[in-house]
Length: 357
Image 1 (cartoon, rainbow, N blue to C red):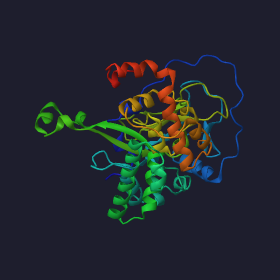
Image 2: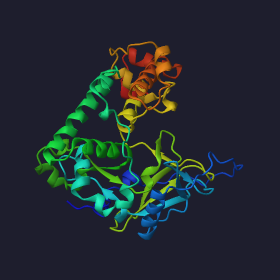
Image 3: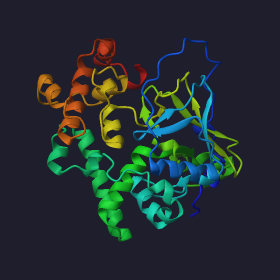
Image 4: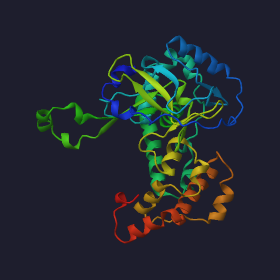
């Protein structure tokens, strides 16, 4: 397996390319969202390593573990660039197994800790993930579809750890990092086949999209958000010396948080909790259409407990009990949110879930 990202980019134009629209409108300068603090020593070392390797990072910096803008930037303005040979490929698109646990195994087998030491030093020692929760804490979620996914990931971590003779806690940690920080590029392997090959390859019509996961030093410190302020694109994606570009999706002021979209497939609040280990405050009001669709797919699944109790427990942010309560609260509120009234009426009348907004 090849280790670096140039091999991955030739078929990925549709995944990460595409502009953000017209020029930014002139607007009154606003006060910075938060005061900048001095960049940590670990990130200062990472910045030097990355810039020595050809990255440009003058538009962003680390502040309290998050990325923020270092200057005023217009919509579509470039915040940072990263050469593809500074990225870490966690899986090969031709691998049969490219899940998060397999990515963790590859991270160790590729000896990335030795090759990218300054970057690895900035990775969280204990990333939040429900995969690390106890069986009782998972059970307390009271949402079986998510419980099943968490338990499947737990099982997969144990399998990979055993097969690769790695400590389970190491595989679990890197799996959580892959789930929360890796950028995903989705490849349709059918696109690589000619019409004749499609006819000859058994099951070609059922070939699924392959996923490539990459860690992008410095870029992946940006928090994920449903309404992000920035996005990653690829410049010259068909070249071996391609470049990742972090661009503003809206006008930013110095000190504003730099956030990026969730990966494809991370749509519901349950998805966010599964992959990022926490439920954002913006999800608690139940306004997410993805959550409404999720509920419609599981109409008979009861969510126990009162909203009042969940609201009280939801104050305990960052703990398994608190995050479980935040999930339950978001789903309960999605069932009663007036924004979804017409959706649920249409579903009850026999409408298709996928056809409803």
